[in-house]
Image (cartoon, rainbow, N blue to C red; front, side, top):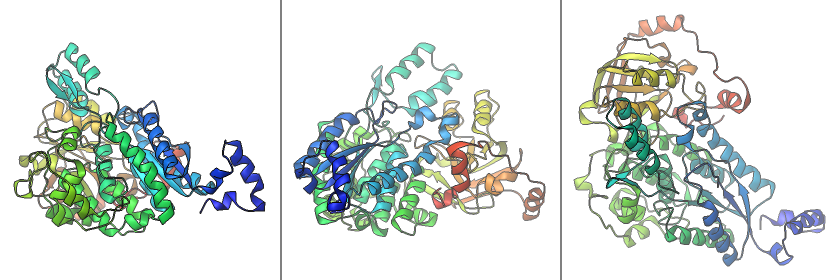
Length: 550
């Protein structure tokens, strides 16, 4: 076993002494050492229930004949970090998570690892870490939150908080009702109820084959989730004995499967960043054009929050990801999963319990998948939009640029009614390096919806969007402003043309005018000059490369 390096031989007497100090018996030294990387924290609703799941993982590892070792992984709640300095950190945290997995597992020569995760950047960070390590690994996602309820209406986090605050600004919601929404929108444990980044990544982790069937949508409050946690603990010991490693599961074909499911579900645009970063760690060549190619061929067959009327609980009750795989079987590669079953086998055994939640391909909500990749003189290296969340009449848009160098400036203008119909909001210097950290723009995009402007105003940014974003909001503009991307020289009043159908994002500017403006261009000074974010900004790559550290 890999752990023999720290527990066998005369020269390891000091090492064994330290291991015995942790409470291990001599018999334990003959068993596989299994790390359990837990991102439990009291700060994140999606993670507060992990103490319970830890018990079941521990039970499973012991039943399987392994020795579990728990260690902590830091977590950030994107919702709480949103709209202020805190949002500079979540994407940067992804790299810390991956590095932490590598560091602890290699320092202690663990034989295998169970990753207990749930929310936005923590799940891809763990997948990056295990792909880099390539030791037997399994992911347990802690599960979605159930919907809130108020006056017989189901509630979801984004619609009933971020969008509600803008409606309150307009006087459409009373202070009393807003206070009730605030209390009831998130009723307890779990990742937020819609197909935001956390739940999208949980679904794609299952599709990749790196978590057990059913894990992606099993609710946080369910006994099913406990059973999956225990089964995952048992399974990791088997994976160690058979030496089944992540790169045997995460490959080009399984990555294509993940993108197919992503497009069919209409998942978060953040998945583009995360899947590219995971592919990089696994040694897989993946670019933006692959996402767009698959999107054009795969219909959008679910209508989940924030763009639809269904919730993650509805997807779970409709059959979960196995049912989605069944629906998409002809579009998928028959890859193996760490459960020991192939994608086709899982799909064949699944049942679809609701034909509207998971529609037939012939009755899809949209003919194309959820995400489109745009190119043009604003985004020579590409930009990303969640096209399934865009109203049909906004698929083509021409508007006047309203340029802001920070999210807060744009948010103030929106709430103060300074943004008018026909405007195209430009938020720049919010990219991976310029942000730094490529902040999510959930606050301004939700405010646009709440102010009733989603069908008349567009937004483009070198930052990114929450999975909860809807409307013509185009992010990941590459190169970013801080890297001398053309978005840096846009001015108020420039005419911006968006054509999602034909994948174009253009400013009505000649090449000569662009070159002229760049002659006088001076970059905005770095916003943060000390600490981790300063180092991060100097090392991070462009969004079209997955915003990985170089």
